Image 1 (cartoon, rainbow, N blue to C red):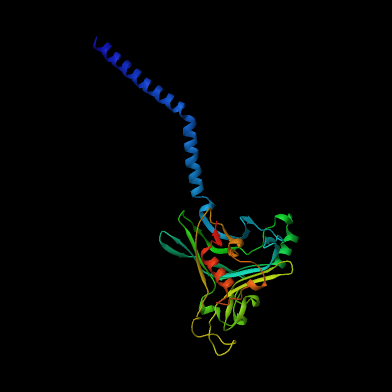
Image 2: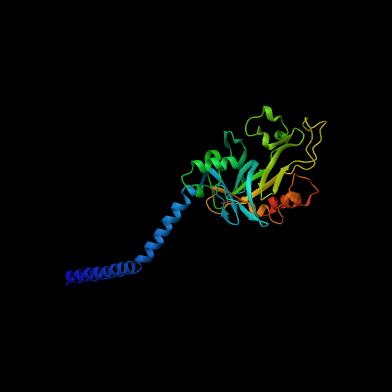
Amino acid sequence: MAHLKIRFSKVFTYMIISKVFLVSIHAIYKHFPTLVILIGAIFASGCSDWSTKNTLLDIRVELWYEQQALSCGQSIERDRLNWGIDQLAFFISDLHLVQSAKKLPLTLSINEWQNDNLALIRLAAADCKQEKLESEDNKEALLPFQTLHLTQQVELTQESELHFTIGLPFAVNHLNPLSQTSPLNMPSMFWSWRGGHKFFRLDMAGEGQAWTFHLGSTGCESPSVMRSPQAACVNPNTVPLSLVKRQDGQRIIIHIDKLLEGLELNTKSSCLMQPDKTSCQQLMLNLATNAVFEWR
């Protein structure tokens, strides 16, 4: 009799375990599609977090107008005229990231357009024509800016901020360009030993019109234009920028329409960095506050 009770107890326990197992299997089967979606989302998120989108080695530069990337030879319509870009060039320096409240300097590889922690980003109409000749699809060839190349890959976070300054430090701005290494030896980006370099240069041509913006330091004092100043210029006119990462951080986009906001393009509104000129004041304000540069 005792043996029967033991056997019955085992059978009863087995039935309970089996029922629990079957209920569990049913629950898993019932919610299987949802589980698959959740697991897939987790893996996709994990892959995204650790993909190349979370690292930085090269930064491509693009020029946009009204939320569209400009291609080679493409003009922009403004103030009832079609404007073409003859040249757009600018120096950047003090390139670094801010992550977890820490400053992380970014070192650039050395070539003719960049050196350690400064670079010249440049587009000329002649370069664009050559790009069109070499492109298989001329209409889709983006404007051929230089790409910023880092010496080593850097991990990014969702909170990463990219910082740099439009312009050059005083210590290198007024040195003799004939004895400097590239890119500080470009004649088209130099005013004089007294004035130093042009930090930002934009030359545009319309239908019978020309418009120019040359940004650089003003109020620099020295015995002659061929002598470097010994003290900082009254108006350094460098522009520090802090950019939040919008997507994967592989591109810097220049919104040319945001730079030109509030201006009517004509010869009179051209700016050679006269401090009291309204157009110069508007351009400096746009550069500093109008999201002309975007890190995407």
